[in-house]
Image 1 (cartoon, rainbow, N blue to C red):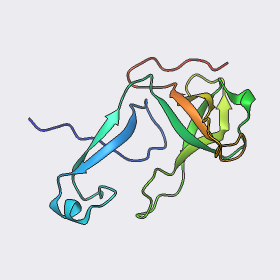
Image 2 (cartoon, rainbow, N blue to C red):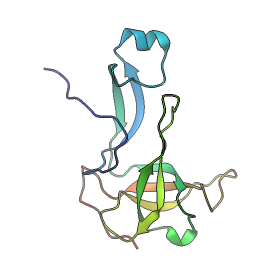
Image 3 (cartoon, rainbow, N blue to C red):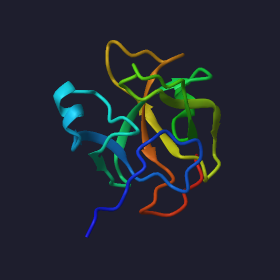
Image 4 (cartoon, rainbow, N blue to C red):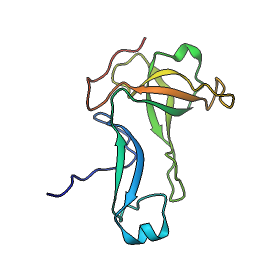
Length: 142
């Protein structure tokens, strides 16, 4: 029996998130030999996804300035430009969308506690899944 196919790409609309990519590997000999950081669209490989609906993730804020009063609100994400050289995800928290709306992807839990992180533009935020394939549609933010 063949393994199910997984579309591991940036999406602009979700029917429900399932998790965060934590590792990838290759079944393509050329990719292994080149030790590529990404699996090419024409290549083959596998990915490991942390799929708990209770996972807390770190994400960068953009398109607005987060404040401590935003904690508890829900928020969506947006995708920045992706190039062949981009190794990390260009997705970010879209601070033009923060609201109490129950269908937004994430719930803002707080700021990453680090001396290198500050409250304001491009802050690193802690988020939980508000919409997830393994739980309800989402809850209203506070």
